[in-house]
Amino acid sequence: MKTINISQLIKWLEKAALVMQENKDYLTKLDSDIGDADHGFNMERGFNKVREKLDELSNSKDIASLFKNTGMTLISSIGGASGPLYGTLFLQASMVLKDKTELNLIDLKNCLENGVNGVKLRGKASVGDKTMIDVLDPAIQSLSDSLNANLSINEALENLVKVAEKGMTSTTDLIAKKGRASYLGERSIGHQDAGATSSYLIFKSLKEAIN
Image 1: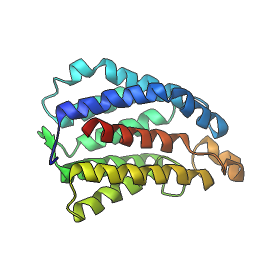
Image 2: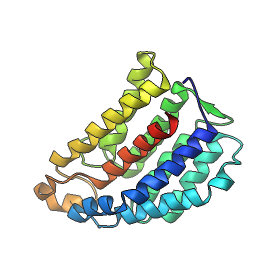
Image 3: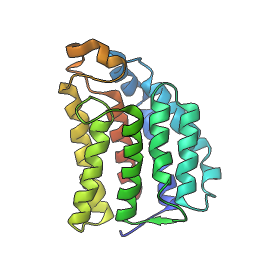
Image 4: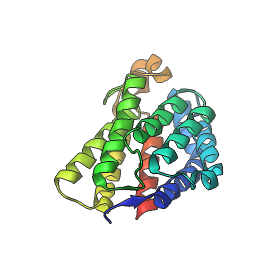
């Protein structure tokens, strides 16, 4: 596969909503260990709102509009810090996709990189802080590596999901440095970060929707 079209991206958003619904209790359990115990509920609610708008979003004239509307919906419907962060991911991704109705691997890398940079700027987090950045940042590097290796989109997404999973599991052994979990200090060790987990699930949903 050389490109991803709007229909496939809408399928991704629908898949992500179902995955968040299926994993609501799991994400909430992870968050209850070191956070506010609301991540699963918030993510399920936010992506369900996106799914409710899919008929409307399917009429988007380009991918930039699709991602912008998705970001705005997430910001308005997800509580806590997750809404602004995931909303920023999609909003900033949309900024480099004007008039595009298909994405090649370069487009995918550029838009997600812009989105992740926006999340890093907003959340002031880095790799190693036990946050979603431990998944997002390596995932972007994976796309760059796949570009350099001249891989297909399918191959690139396979690699991205493997890297994202590794980033997710790596958070278990880290000390939280951001958010409520940071107050626990070393007691946060041994718990997988909920935000890193939902980020992994979103990328896994993308791969499954495209393949």
